[in-house]
Length: 144
Image (cartoon, rainbow, N blue to C red; front, side, top):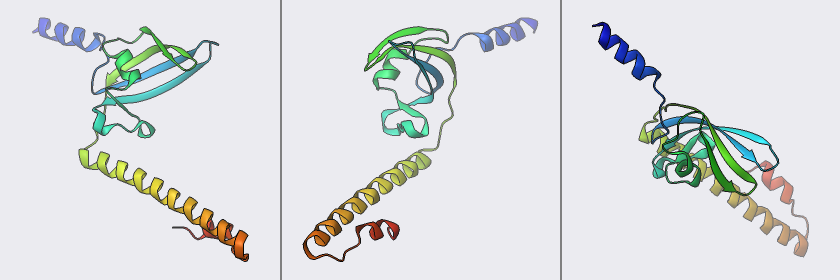
């Protein structure tokens, strides 16, 4: 019985490698020595939403850190970033697929609405230039 408890405590403290479903805290390091911390869960590509903290498993960053443990430093050359440090790895939280789909749909709707607003303002500006008396700024104030 004591042996089982020892095995459980040993496996609980064993380092967890980064994998699909992990919650990861990393630090991106630039060539100038600047640091930026990011926390995210690694999820299947169709559930990715970095703004909500969900990184696609096939993204460049996820591919660079998969299999690494906390404390690892991995070369990662993207723009001015030169390495990524894995600060912690834990089990991630899974959102239900319906919630992921709803979040994605809300983001898409917001983007479409912003695009429609920009088009309406452009149209109003072109009308104002030609015929006058159109208030393009008033459109944004009444946009739903």
